[in-house]
Length: 392
Image (cartoon, rainbow, N blue to C red; front, top):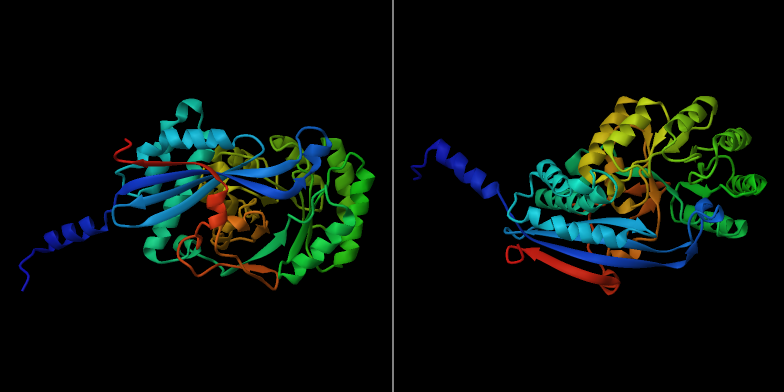
């Protein structure tokens, strides 16, 4: 018969619940695309065609044998910088309790605060933060969406990867048909061609091909000025679009707000912003109808949750940008109307696949994000570092 006091029992239980981070493994990965990709930023000469995506992968292990997986990414420039910054701040995690995610997020941000608390600095933190949330959900033996508090077990989804400006319209029509056959519910295509009449013809062809019942979105990738956005936006009204995305510069909050007040078509933006504060200003100004935060860009799931709370207060729809492998869980946990963006680019990095059915992406029942790295991911790894007590 035990003679332990209730206080001793409580102390023992608390001690058993505490775990410590023992190792952080970082990988710098380059994912090559099958063909160069162009959107409006390429046609206006501001960027070169996209040929690869750089990834910062973080694997966090604990003394208790738990492991969490997270990643951040960069298109074109910045991948090397993400990896370098992450390598510098990773020692801050060693010996810490992985359950204290908000505290650790702030610790990591302040460790690199001299280079800023947004942008690349917090994007590097995102890989750690996502890994910590994945670890916590795995420890609870719950899908991340369930740990956060799911409102649905499947999320309306739309495809983007088949609708770039570098693809002729005939290919976009074929890609759209294939996406719908895969169970994807909506189609987004890129606009922002220097000849706006070309944009109109492409949208008209896709709408005619899809019929009136399939959700159709367009994305100008910030390449219209305010006057062009108003003019083209009015012309596009007849196609019953679900939204017009980033019609003007991502940081032109007033321009987005003015457009949102004039068009019947909802305006979507937010994917390029890298802090909670920037999103707060966007919402305060009434600059969008659909908010599109990116967990990897804003610093992880911890700040994403703050943005989601703000969006809910403003009764906005949410459509997180890119990285469906993460955002499916976050969208499932959002109380309001939500979408998830289907991009098949990242699929080779992971063993598992996400399933779409009847226009919705199903939340996997596997614990955490439900992901494990593939052999192909390891083959595309250019650099790898291990940070543990010996290294610190």
